[in-house]
Length: 471
Ligand code: PA5
Image 1 (tube, rainbow, N blue to C red):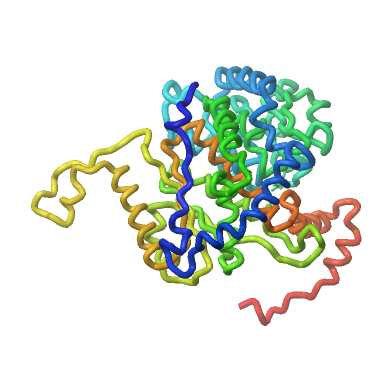
Image 2: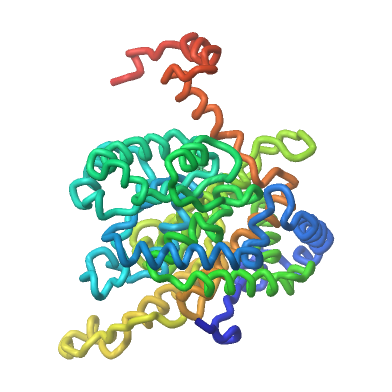
């Protein structure tokens, strides 16, 4: 599908990050200009790194034409032959598919009749809660389900345990044909899943070497589930490409992702350790979960690239407008000055509802009549933005003219770029996650995995919990 670039361009409104609007806690033009050199260095670093090391994600809008055709052909078969499509994955192998499904499918996709839905029902199992997995098997027929096992490392315990459970059930039902119900999306070189996939003869898609989990939505990790759901994946990639081109200047005032990174950097320096993403659209609700992983795991680092202890990062918080106006906005307006709120606004909703007349005798209700629900939602967003501004709270807004494949591609790429720039400004390794290793290794040790005997000994020597503190 073709998208008009002018009509579908994302905008970044940072008025309420400036001193002119929110007063002393905002940034002056002088402060912003003082960041130009550091911003240029971050821009250059990201530009020079493109396509190298862990920065393979920058090239995804450009280098996947063959893969996309394979994905579309595979998706067509799945749509014809399966009732359900289940993703088995966690973290970066799940959050992108969930976010894009929510954004670009009907909000009650699974409940629609099959002929309206025109795609299988969609589920993402991104936890190992046995009740949840059993509940899934209560509602799907595994024989009519395609399972897409997604793991970059090909070794993640959660995903591999799900894989074992699912294939055991499939083998019992389908015998040798079970392999027709499994697609593996994994690294071509490392991990066990690729070995298993080759041995079993599964259809396989590859996660490129230089694309890490949380940067993988625009590769087969996200593209296959999206294509199965009938989402315009070429449109998403075009949107990402458009954002890449929009952000090709080293001056923040001309590069929205760089400006957004600079503003968060300045905010962090002033003690804003919390970043809230607050979409005003249910379709974008899970974009906030995707963003939380991207921002949290990429930037939360103990040491910088020179080995200095920095304990960098900001705690990402997800919030939903208007729902959380009735739960969290009190805190954002009057609590500690430790947050930046980013609203995600949608100008035009894909469907509307008129609030009808019917309360003429009740002026306190009647004022709503005749407006659309979308207008009420956006007015409340504007009003909340105003309240935060008046309270001197840092906030900014990303504006989507509409939610469609092209704008979602832009949004995903915008945040990936912003995260890369932010990591460069903070001089940290954006692409590793050493902080999650300890927990993983302790699990392996407790499960008596070979090679983790020393860790097991270390765990056994840990202080025994006191009953005194368990009440
Ligand atoms: O961003 C990352 O690399 C991680 O959060 C991974 O996405 C997550 O741990 C899942 O890893 P894998 O895809 O290897 O199963």
